[in-house]
Length: 419
Image (cartoon, rainbow, N blue to C red):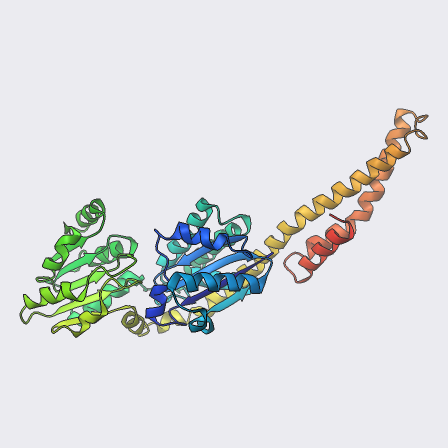
């Protein structure tokens, strides 16, 4: 059994394709059931964020598991496999481990070193574990990945002066508007990203923060936290007639605002421009609103271009983070191989003890004349001989932990002793 990852992200496919491959929290249980029921998948964790959709899989058939994930993505997005297969990346064993560690460290994010991904990795693993699709192997892997993400941020400057995706969205909006002071801003969505955007706005001198969310209690709670006012979703279209900026990231599976919603609002705005920053994947706002007079629409592609500017200092830290990842991959593989060796060693010792006891029993009649001390001496001698014989194989197996020889020796012992 080994681990593979199959996925696509903001670097390999367009936003149009990526948003169709996104798995929302509501759809996640069904998606895990679907993947877990496939022929070649023993364990699975599905990591689906604004930037990526990746399946981490435990399997004993590499090509079969890749095919299973590819078919799942095709059915999820209603896209023929041949239209996106060339854009899938696939990593196996130590490369899969290194990839996840890099994701957790923020090396694979739109905003280099951003911290939100660490919570997303944790959430994906915890949901898979609660659902029963993440067993011992993937749980060990994801637990270690969280340690790596924390170590990378504490021991290097990869997160120095960087902001999260949400903070970057606010900074991009501020640059486009020439500042946020005196502006009225509507935040649509009170999830992790929406909450972070609202918090980033608080204290920036804005004239007012409005918060709308599908769950009213969350909108009220977040609005109170940032000194704003809560709105119902039904009130959003009318409110757009008077705000300067709309920041949206709801996590909804389809469009929240159609072109017609904003068209009605712009007709009442006169010459007042409206900036819309949609960092949701799938998108919350119909791309067609970009054609409306006075409306500027920015999305994840624009955010990616924005954050590419001015990250030179953090890029200098990438090599140090990669060094940490290399060390942690080696440590994880060593621990993993040692865990694999332990059952083999235990089974081997149990097997030879079973044979020793059986042989003593076979010669019971001949040993009947021995007194207790003599019988104990026979027991001690036979146990000692077998312990010496087993010493070298078990030491070699433990020493091979984390090396390419580890799995080979492990399988050899199991085959030779029929374990």
